[in-house]
Each structure stands twice: as C-alpha cells, then as structure tokens.
Length: 60
Image 1 (tube, rainbow, N blue to C red):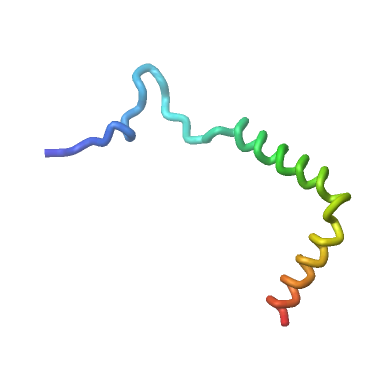
Image 2: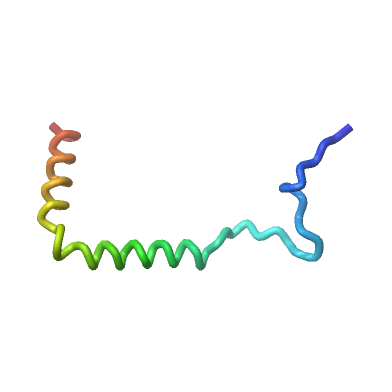
C-alpha cells in the first residue's frame, strides 16, 4: 500500500511551478538594497570598521 502526502499532489487544473516566487525575491532584494543605500551615509564608517575587523580575524 502506498501513502501519498497531499503536499506532493498538484492542484487540480494547475501545473506545478518549480520556479518559486520570483517577484517576491526581486522585492526582497530591491528592498534590501534600498535599506543598505539609505543607511550607508549614517553608518558607513562603522560598517567598514566592522568588516575590516572581521576580515582581520579570519585572515590573521
């Protein structure tokens, strides 16, 4: 006897879409870039110092 999970069955009348939520990922990426661009003038020096310390710990 085979058991099937309902999550693996395609919806009636619709093909299974394997691409994912492309517009959602585009929106998340765009919003992240906007937030980074907006915060860079205020916290740019602190972020640069943080990254330099992190790279020094990894490479040194």
